[in-house]
Image (tube, rainbow, N blue to C red; front, side, top):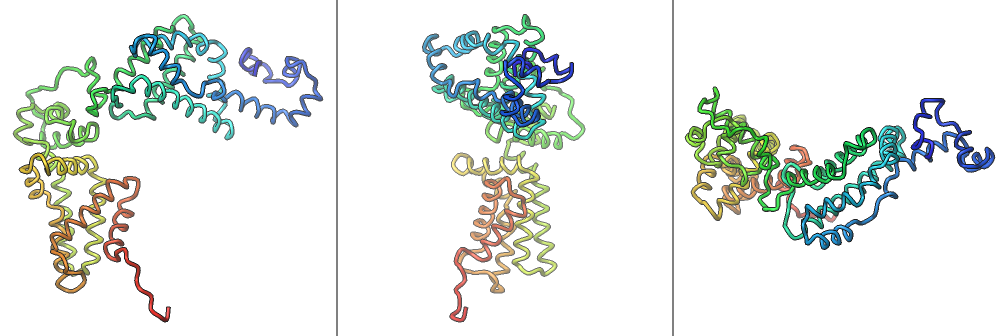
Length: 412
């Protein structure tokens, strides 16, 4: 370890020789080979220790952060600067920089060392989250999308790694103040203490460019608005997106955007209309071909599940809009139910099944269609890692067979 870190140039001059190691350790060849059966075994042990950073870091920094906050009267900025200055010399020294470079370069070449290296990063991520937890414990802060606790930790760890490496080459350039200011800059953009669940774009005011108020329409403004709506709903969610932000993304003047889509609900309808029509046509085709009603239901479930995946942003927004409008704006809900009546697509199939005895007629077809559609959508939204086929088959099997096990006959 000492030779690798203190004199890495030795790797270019004959490699790491066991004679040099034995001499530096004040040991003997016999002792060396009793402890390590071979040089390769010794190198594996050196590599494992080289990449092991967990032992170099504290297990918990929360007491230290709390103490620092108390010292500076709760000022997060002063606390961060004070902690960086206090630990700068220990973290940013030549040995740390060399060790980090070697660990990153050599660690992935050995499976055991790679596991240790990743464990070190996981520990660093945990310490960064401890810092966040204490600094913002009483503010209700959240991360701006698309950042989350994992990616935020990766950003800060990568930034510090870069500073450590740069400090190895130019120590006079990487100062404690620069590191502290950079950490604060990342925190300022990443953290939202208004609990609005905003997007990182909302904090990029300095580089956001001029507001998109061009009076020149794109060739297909409706298409542009739908594409922008898909992007904004993905980034911000239904509640944080607005027609203004969508219009700016689409480069459509706000007044023109409002004439095409007066509300976000109208935009959702516009974004899902073609998919909805494809579902309706699929059911109509299956019925016209006299497929059995169970097959029609399964085909429809599969098409719906695929639509949820294909139009995830608009389908998520649809559910949010329906949930909100149920208690807040019933007029909009009526519009969605009229324009995108998903349960209504299934009702004729259930009615046919009830008439021919394939399905139970204990409840109205419309009520059953609504229940089955809601169940399928809930499954798709809560099991996003599943394929459309898995979600559709799960709900279909439950609908067709129910929960009750078939009774066994006496001969079974």
